[in-house]
Length: 248
Image 1 (cartoon, rainbow, N blue to C red):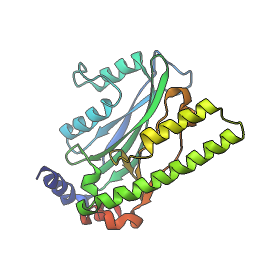
Image 2 (image 1 turned 45 degrees about the vertical axis):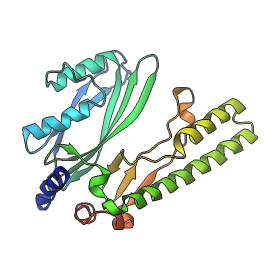
Image 3 (image 1 turned 90 degrees about the vertical axis):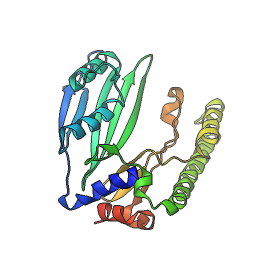
Image 4 (image 1 turned 180 degrees about the vertical axis):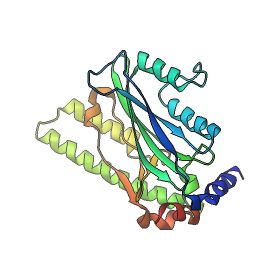
């Protein structure tokens, strides 16, 4: 019932085409300053139609990289604390901001013993501040078929990757231990699974983010693939309400 209520609220204002306003809260990363003319940290402060909605969205964004236990609802304090400790850089990209939906990606690098970078994907219903899931977007009866389609594409991409590194091994451009390490990760952690939890929306397409992540020691050798789908091509999987939101 909660899901239906949220969706009803979302759709009731679609004709208004609501979007959010965004301003940047910029900081230098004091501990890991990278020596450029631009601040290393740029946090997107979201302003929705209501203050409590704005707070709800921004709190979820900050929680992706900062300790919020003692932040006292101060974005400045949370950003300053993170930038002074382990936050090396923070950037963002807004890929969808219309029809009461905000899709935003945070690009984060934190540093401890070594530096780690990752992306955090958020899709918000800006009338409630709640995150949107693929369960909201897809027709329930067709979710499994969609998931199977995405898994097949991911599997094909990883099979191609396995062929590529086998060729590199044959050419002596990759050593045996690295080849075996990469192969083990693909086979044991990636090729037999699929997740629809992380995704982003843009004007024309949906992208599922289910990467095959490699450990830091061989991170740069991980497989690179995209699971992108034009809305028009997957319209049969989209609920009627979300067709109205996404397909022009």
